[in-house]
Structure formats: structure tokens, C-alpha cells
Image (cartoon, rainbow, N blue to C red; front, side, top):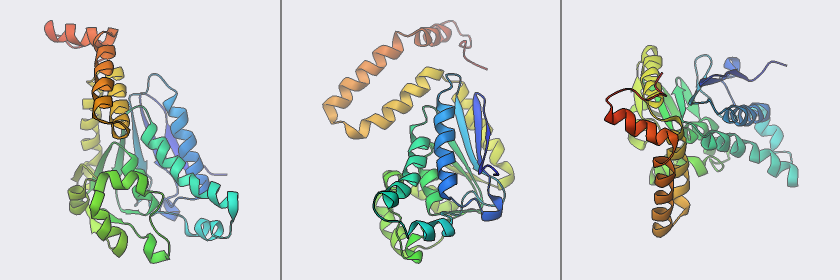
Length: 257
């Protein structure tokens, strides 16, 4: 069976959705492979960043309709387990310990917006099109909300309920993507972002992402205590000492490529 993904491991890994003939639509098998691939990549201590992209014209056209129809006939635990596949895939992206950078082109619909929202950084082609299309199909953008709503907040009250298309300028305004460029320039944009990540301490980046994920569940005093303990751990670590020494000695730190 043809893999639904192309995975290129390495310090800067690449994971590509590989169903261009289906516009990279998400099936149960696709989602299971995404979750598995991200969990596997996360185990590498040398991992510095992951680039998430789609082969062909589209990043991801949402859920595979054949799968959704089939899933609609399930009941009980089987139905719940099937619905949890999208959550697990998005969670694997979100929990990846290093920055995940989404390279977005073409159409991004439904569940594809869940993957996009779960990424840390997103760079979009200027002519990309976005749509929370679920209500058109008599369903709703439920599972992706855990990842989408923290990014776009009350703007969902329009786009969830109208299922209208919007372009890269609006995706930028909403905070779904961080930069846009002509599609031919996307790789150059991402290369610049990756260069920035690689200039930072590897453990510091991991700790920073962990802090960002932990803060929403803590009250103010817990946040202060947590941030202090995180800083003390980083400041006294070999990497922290190397970074401070390199700055004082006006040289590049040891981790710089």
C-alpha cells in the first residue's frame, strides 16, 4: 500500500502529505500515519525543526468524504475511536517538542486547518484559499476547534457559521498564518525561519515551546513559579552557560550550524 506520507528525517525533518490525486484529503489511514510519524520524529534528540507540507497543488482539502461517510455508519466506541483520529494527529503536531513549520499552498479546508493551527509557524502562498467547510456538509468543525480557537478566537463565529472561502490576507489577519509570499518564494521564506531556529539553543527552543504549551492551564502565581523554575534550569545548564559565554566572548555558540 502506498504511504500517505513522505517523511524525510534529519535535524530539520520534512513530513509531506502524499495524496495529491485526492488533494491530500485526510482519511483514517492518513491521520494514523501523521500521528505515528510525528511521535517517531519526536524521539530523536537531534531533531531541531519539522516542516509540514503537502505534495501537489493543495496543502490539504480536509477530510476524505468516503471516509467520513463510512465513519458515519459507526456507533458507540468504534465511532468515538474513529473521531479521535483527527484529534490525535493534530495533538501529535502540537506536542512535537520542536518548532513545526507549515508550508501552505492551494486549498486548506476543514481538518487541514486543524493541522495548520496545530503547527507553530505557518507560511502561506499568496493565492492559497482557506475554508471551514464542515457546515456545508451537514457536520461542523468540532475536533479542530481545540487547536483553531486559541488562534482565531471570536472570528470563528463568522467563518464556522458561513463556511465561506477566505484568502491569505484574511488568514494573516486572523493569525492562522504568519507570513505569505508567492508560492515560488515559500521555500526561501521557510529557509530563513529555519535559520533563525537553528541559531537558538536547541534545548532552549524545546523549553520555550514547552512553556508556551503549559501556560494556558495555569493561574498567574503558577505561571510565575513555573517560569522561574524553567529559567533557573536553563540558565545553569551547559547550553545556557555556553550561550552566555559565547555572547560575552563575541563568538558563535557551539550549536550554531
